Amino acid sequence: MIRRSDRMIHVPRAAASRGFVAPRYSRRVRRFMITVGAWYLRLIEGVSNIDIHNESSLMDELESFFANDHRLIIAFRHAAKEDAPVLMYALNRKLQRLARKRNRLKEPTERIIPHAQFLYGSDVLEWAGKAAAWLFPRVGCIPVQNRILNKQSLTMLRTQIQQGAFPIALAPEGQVTYHMYRCSEIAPGIASLAHWAAQASQKVTILPVAIGYRHAGNQQTFIRSVLSRWQDQIGITLTDCTTAPILKLLLEATEHTVTLLESLYCIDPEQKAPASIRERILMICEAAMKRAENIAQISGDGTLLDRLFRLRYLGTNATRPKQSHQHQSPVIRRFADVKALEAHTYLHHTQLVDVLEYIDPDYIAPPCSAGRACEYALNLLDVTNRIQEGNINSRYSPRRKGAYVYIGKAIHLDNRKNQGEPPFSKNDYHKLLQEVQEALETTSLAMENDVENEMLT
Image 1 (cartoon, rainbow, N blue to C red):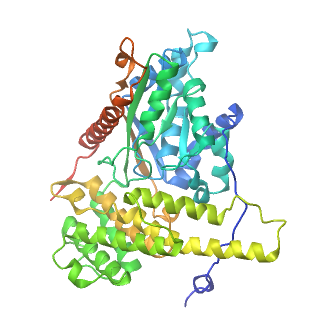
Image 2 (spheres, rainbow, N blue to C red):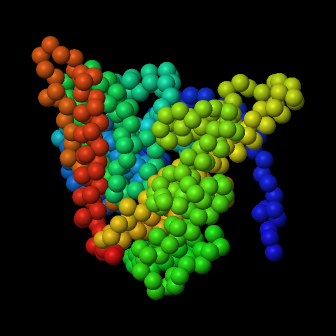
């Protein structure tokens, strides 16, 4: 029997805008976060333990920062929605004992506080919930809008990187990439941060951090259980899900998923005939984006990620308009609700593209680590979640997973200042972005080589 809730259509309505949520750091709230952090990770995010690799390097950089020796930017890979809570807890709780040990002989003004101000997309508060909306500003988090110039956000960022009490932590890839062991293109924002930091300090350090997860002890059994969930959701039975090779099953599930989406988006069979699976996936992404942009009545300019961000912020402005409608007429308020409903429709297509664009069979080309196969299976399952109007918050996230935080080799910019030149020349931007990307890729692969002990063929 179909549940009543499944028969109902929930119509979104426009709500008041939050405006710019400025950080207002509270030491008491930070202590509260440390106290409840382990319970939150275990009960909400499903993370049972965190291992930090090369934590002494992280402590060295924090020590130099609080000695006013340099500015510090922590650049972390963003492969899952759990990343920021994991890294924040790793900093504030896991490093606490080391910080106390080093602080014994320090002056009060130079004592290490293992904390950082995290940057987050302003649209995150739309799905992260009321608790996040309360917590984020009180632990110093700063909202940003990728690909959009926001004067309030930029001014706040510049002030915090130059004068802030803590290092800045950000995901330079710009959004969740769903790949633990592959780094996506770096957004230019981190170069601007480094430039601003160099204007305030002779020394600037960018510390690359990779974050990964082990979802189960027996990873092959776990993958088969995820594929069983996929079968239940999509209504298609795979060939011998219990004994067939894992990679064969994942490719078969990919083919079925792509074929279904092609029918839903009315892809011409002649278009897909000679194309590879990856090319067909990109065709579906393009069809979904065009449909979303037609509903939103905007042009599809720029890269796929540019277009995604444009629609996200357009949708946020529609569901949470800046103009207050509380004291306006019922007609105005109802029209705002209609715009919110339209936004809900086109954002549904962007939610699908958000994860589908990262489905790439090359990521699990044999021989492939079991961790990559686990991640790929979870992404396929998430595609079915997005088809059903889900988002990253409703993504299936297994319990009792272990998290790994890998600290890479720091990038020091203090030697780049030549006599008579600015602290950080604009000519160095491209070189720095490439250097950060290479550092993140190197750290991610080092984590894979150290953590993964099972290969699939």
